[in-house]
Length: 63
Image 1 (cartoon, rainbow, N blue to C red):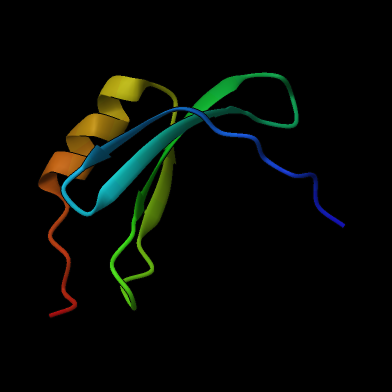
Image 2 (cartoon, rainbow, N blue to C red):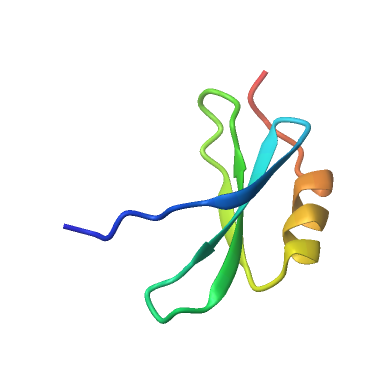
């Protein structure tokens, strides 16, 4: 069973939600996830700035 991820410092930019968590090696990671039903886009980044840039440039293809 995979470990449970606890997010902190959540932020929302449009339909994309950004959260910070610690990976299994203890490093801080940032993830950006589109919350639109049926989109399924998500990605992990090493910095909050990169996650925010991805959130601002994400174009959801679900209408």
